[in-house]
Image (tube, rainbow, N blue to C red; front, side):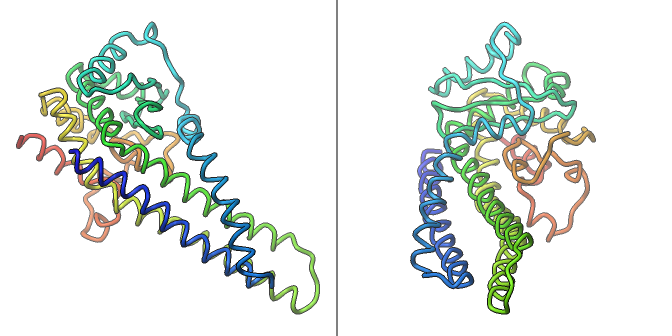
Length: 297
């Protein structure tokens, strides 16, 4: 477990450095397309990217929660849930995270935040309705484990960095489509910029998926195991996952940017038997395999 925490911190830096190198290359290409000094374009773009990333990183938890329609609640609103989270936080040796409720009939939950001191757990009303006390405790322990293992930091970074690529793509595409420049050279520059914008727009989902695949599968198994360790009752989470799997209600505000945050895919496609290649691009390991591993503990 401690090795995984250290690995997640290393992956954070690898992700930042690798993404930074990629962005420098993109800005240099844009500079060449616009016939300006590519080094200057890389410096200006790098500063802009750094500023955006820092602001987004610190604000991303709030933005993610807002995008999913999550509303913060106090202990008086859901005392039993609050007590569960408090007890789990004490057991895990973590600060008490903020608790949010999403008004949605689909049973699901996720954790977010840049570190354990600024963490939050969100659960849907559908989850609260369907699960009994032991099952709910299993899900909350799973999310608490994501916080303890620093999974939330790297998951948040994925949303921030891919969001920046999409933003760059939209800016390039819109600026070229609205441009009224004339002359063969100017049109050539705009065409190259448009192509770069389209390529970024096409590549962004693939890059997001590749990054998610690099971190998602193992962290879900680890969170299942460490969550079971917190509760000392693997069957609680296993039973909860069975109920989540049996639901055919998609999350109303599900989107591919935040899907990897949830305990189970928020799309109904998770119920369909998939081929080897389809399984290869899932953000979550097969839920049946997770249940099997929990019940073998």
